[in-house]
Image (cartoon, rainbow, N blue to C red; front, side):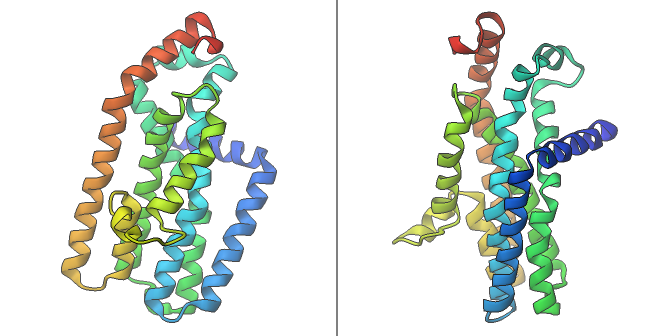
Length: 245
């Protein structure tokens, strides 16, 4: 399984390199966001929050692109039958692919935190390390959830901007509104940002535990609610063609 996981990381990295315009855009965006937080951060806590926002802002696009391709590419390249008949269960394969997608996004995840740590060396601590791990967990599970969601649509690419917009405005409160912070707590991102803000040990533990709970609810809900329809759509696409769905 480890070799398979490493192979998927390599394949996804090659796939990202092949879409050079997207890679260039993500690189420029990461660099600009890191430079901005380095220049405008008022203190270490502010820098950590900005780094967290920057990494999630950039990486949601990477992860949603991977989610869109997870099942769609199998039909595009005619390999879906081998996937379904392989030794790795369907849900296990989606899980491994989603984890690989999060790993591939590592440069865009880590660079903002490096920028924050260069500005405030005291951020090189356990708090920051756990925060980075939480971002990885969020992105991996988001890819899994989004794969199940996007494969419900005939044109998954058309839905990606809407899913990303919902995450940015509701989960990250990019444009704050009355009650936006409360709404963000329904998403894992709200608890990640709360973890970045807090310094009290008790609050940090509470935020982490609730974060894991919210991630579990979203992931379990997506799997229980969409797996049967996903299997049915895949079966329809195999027998009648993609147009039938």
